[in-house]
Image 1 (cartoon, rainbow, N blue to C red):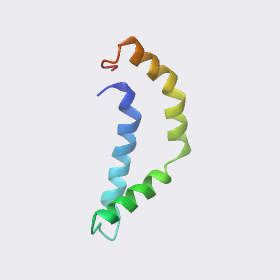
Image 2: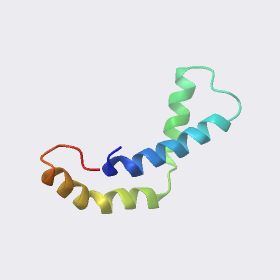
Image 3: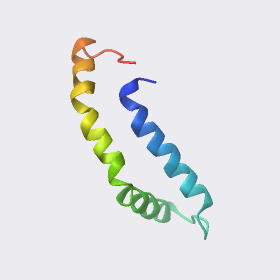
Image 4: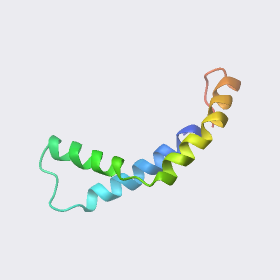
Length: 71
C-alpha cells in the first residue's frame, strides 16, 4: 500500500474496530451508514491535522512518480 494511503488506512482500521463492538448490532444499510458517519464526524482533529499537514509531501511524491505508486 502506498504511503499516501497509510493514514486513511489506519483510520479505517480503527473505525472498523469501533463498528464491530457497537451494540445493538447493525440491522440494515441505514444503520451502517449512520454509524459510519457518526464515527467519521467524531474522529480526532489530530487525524485531520496530520492528513492536511502531509498533503504537500504527498502531492510532491505523486508528481515525482508521474502519477505512479508512491510507496
